[in-house]
Length: 65
Image (tube, rainbow, N blue to C red; front, top):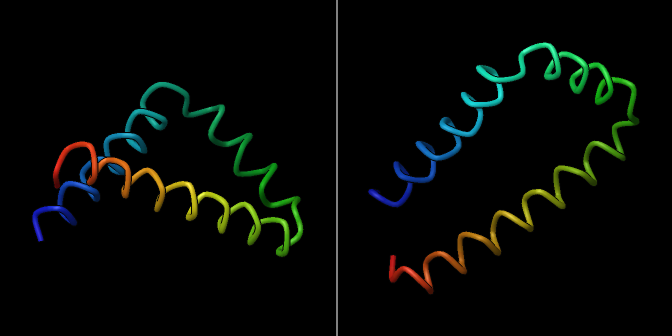
């Protein structure tokens, strides 16, 4: 359970930084994503998911979590 809370906290930190440091840029990125096809957005999401799983596995291995 602690691992899940840590993961959610890290995501919120990164998202908060994006909103705090570059709010107008975020609007541009959202508009660009809206122009992509659903299949392309799905592919980007699956790629991000795969990278995230690998990073979590590496962190757990290296940090002993």
